[in-house]
Length: 463
Image 1: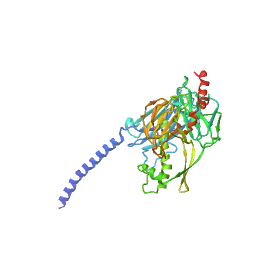
Image 2: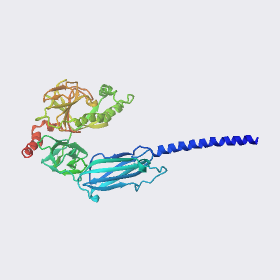
Image 3: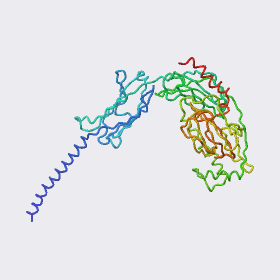
């Protein structure tokens, strides 16, 4: 019995040894594979532009999902001189439970004055190494270079035009020169920005910007030209201007049940429509929310403008028509003797015979043809440099988007689509994204004094 137990023990030891050897071999293989992994660190660096200003911030992430980051170095090569900007260990980066440092976010500033860096070309250099045992225990290495340009000087902005008198609800023109190409340049009016356009003059650095003053902006509204270069350097330049106060008409509109019953069903397919709501609530939805959406539909066409003046002379109006409502009329809506809402009328209503022919007010390019809610069927024409005309409540449209039209070309027929109470044309004009008073653009003298004269006075001096 004792002899058998000894044989069992003797037989067990070789088996245990084999298992232990297998574990050691497998463990060694795993160790070699994991420690000698060959994946390089990954680098993400946030550079929205290759241009850097006097005090630029750079951020990014370096990561290695296997062995973790061992070393991170970021430097700058400028005029043959190398400057260290960041080196691990980071002052604000401490290993947590995962001490392998598998993901390291970084952020640093480059202050040209502190570092003594001049404007011009440079290289941003990044080196990252992981904890792999490859390359004689130096780890896998990622090397990254980014070509950058230091630009610390804002563009020089010069105002060339003079006499900028603008009415509330009216338009103006500024002509200016920028010393360098600037993707963003134009005129700031309060919170509204109107981009400038070059190409009219031989000098490509000379820009023209039509701008608008909203009907409710007062004399204290700040207006100035501005330009932002590729590096983000900003220049602002003020100029003489005077905002002329203008009075707009107050109007009262009595809503009848007959009108509501006739018009409200036309809007039932609109998103957000509440079919079970009372008629007054449905009207308020149309007059507020739908009006806002429809104005956006029209004004977003301002982004499609051609970089040249397409029109000539005074703008035309609907022939043989009489005005029925004016620009920026303040309308108060009355239902059953009580005020229920208000709105501004951002165009001029013109009435003629039913289904009268509607001509293009001036030469331009058709940019929108279709339905616009409360405005019904509309045609929108771009006249270049951010100036547009709008024709609303049409019963029929005779042009397609992209078509070039001349002044007087037939574009549609008057009607009562949308929220119109009778057959008429709602004629509107806007600059970039702000409605303006069409009366100015119907006036040959106003155009001569505020647009043509400014351009002609500068043409002999600009090359």
